[in-house]
Length: 468
Image (cartoon, rainbow, N blue to C red):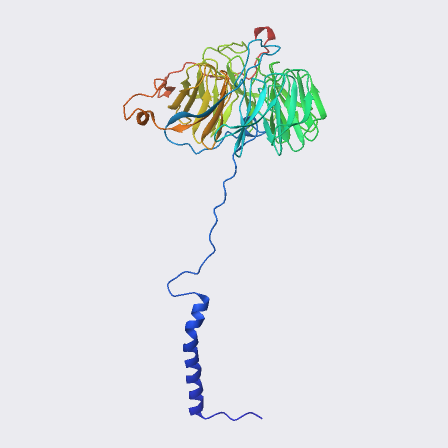
């Protein structure tokens, strides 16, 4: 049985009471929710992500040898931020004392530390902001290879035939592996394996954990440069005039190609091609799958198959945005097309160039044997800045956060940055920058300022070692 409805007048009174109650409660409701007309809903504050620490873990950045450093670059001119004077050491094969850094000699960088391989026989760990020494590890002869950073370990090698694994925190020794001769190249660490070549003509694979030998590929030829790891294969150049592609799993040879001269370069492996160079002053490109020669570029004054102290190449090819950058003993930094090996421009430095030339954010950085650090445009080869810091720079710079870390053979290690422009430093006086007389030489319409052209030799004849 349903209840009788209240009279209409009563129902109207109910509605008025309810409406009045809502009006009274509304201000409190909106105050509790803290939402007012015309204001957006509050959101939690956004916390900016911390930038990733700079990491140049090994020679040319990683086992694939294709990471060259980080910017940003500041405007201005190069200046010394800090420097450190090393000791010196005489070795079995060099009676004259060595200090600073030697070829190839690129430092490695992680976080707030920079690690230098020194020709005085020490691997140094510095605070990279101010150059304060954190620790040093002493070997029996000069260090030359880039110290490789992997986890809590540093792996370093040099002229005393040893490969050392030390604690990254304090430089204490973890393990030590002795080869048959010098190890100038930086190791490539992939997973739990350590790959490198030696001047005892062998290619090695060690266990990262304890330094024990996993396997050795004997007789490939003396290896001065670093090895390159890419997609389960290892690529290396030798003093025996050959380029090898090995299976990283077991060290077996997949293919080998004739270079035609002693090669100290670390191969660059990009877009199906393998690039290398040699002491005959020639840059070469091969097919990655077969080792077939694709092109070669003969630098000015060089001769195919004939090594030369003044015309040869000791640097490694740097690939950047479809171009190859490489310096030579003739004092020129070359920019070539990567697909055909054609000259785009070349830059005349103050002296012969032995070190490699990292490209970071459109700028090429390299040293020369006259003691200058050169900073030029990757686009057109024009000088941005240069600075003389020693008498001989044949090592390779590391670039981290727009600062340059480099050693000279004068016994000093440096950190360089971008300071005031020369005009500002000289109180507004208008003068040309030192080295501005040096211009990039390239192609202009129908004229070629450089007479040498890429030479394609599909079937390069073998060259006798006696011609080296």
